[in-house]
Length: 232
Length: 92
Image (cartoon, rainbow over all chains, first blue to last red; front, side, top):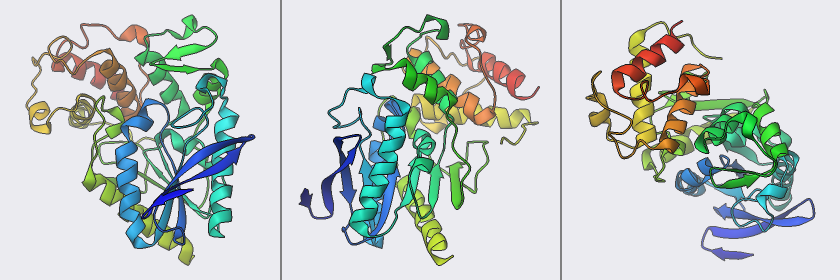
């Protein structure tokens, strides 16, 4: 484990492989697990996620961000990964954090991350702009200009080489109805939500950007929700 | 899960918000678009990846489904054509 101030890296084990967990915040803080958006949206929201975690750390939270198998610094190849690998990884990352902290984390999921948060044991859940898997898979196919009937085994979609099995499972996945759960969306999004926040849909930007104002608003909303969960 | 849109002004507002997000253009520039403002082929930011993002984000925010055979260059030519398409999808 390495650590510089309140930034640290640790490992969690899932399906006999060690994957990385990034930590922002003092290890003794109340544990939070972040499940990032999937595929290209993950890269586009990395700065927003880090800024949100940094905004939460001084409030006494310890924020953890796992690399899913086949993503980030993972040594596994994405085209070997199935949907259940990711669901198990969410479960195992939450369990690893719970062991370190001595209590279950609250989980914040963004976009496609919300398709995985029900696999993990959590004290409470919070979702920002949750997306249906069908929408994410259509976006991958569109971005690579591949018609569904032209799909071949071992797909290379928008620069991501992934298995047909992963794409099929993704297309069927929807965020699970769970309690306690709070859903937050952008003000420009017509979907149902407990709260709407002003800000840009950074997961759509081809040039990754951040929004300190949105990160601060997300940290504020998530923090208030955790306090409400912990009090009840 | 979606609040049904009945107001053409809401579709206009949503479309502009999506264009701002997808193209990364300043809001004041997108808010000044009129029906004749050229889009595909006229904005360097509007490449095929951006078209994919635009369609998916419109689907999510308007609660609609867009089939691939509904998408052509005419519909993306200018702001008015895209708005007409979005209204026809969202308000029916």
